[in-house]
Length: 203
Picture (spheres, rainbow, N blue to C red):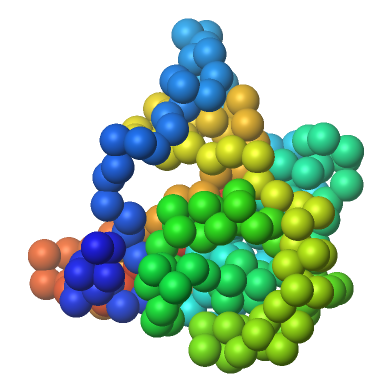
């Protein structure tokens, strides 16, 4: 169903359609009514990753957010594999370059993710899928040790801010326009959509 939207989004982040089955912030935690601080930054030395020329920004953003989730438990950042997240997909998932956040999170929740030391490979989806197929059971066993407990969808700036404070890092996806380059610029009416980009916000 979701790959029908690809005509307008050709970058790494592919926007998932809304689904009433998605968990929301209200369903997983009690929403505080306390005033938000003027400034906030997630605790800990959150790693900054470089996706290079690959379209795996979703995998990078999820790897960092998940590493912070581990940090909140044991104060140690796990270096999760971006390549395994990018290549591990169901047959019913989108099979091209780029990724849907919901599909990636669902697979992380069900299968887990390897550490980068166990699956350090990077590249196109086709190459990552082929690499996993070389030793599927071995990678599956390693990945099963680090599964995502739960995930939820945010619908407003207010929810993003409160999720940062209560849960830590947040994965966000944005539409990028022709004016988007090494420096992000506010798009004008003349700019055209050129894809999507996923990022991990920490504050």
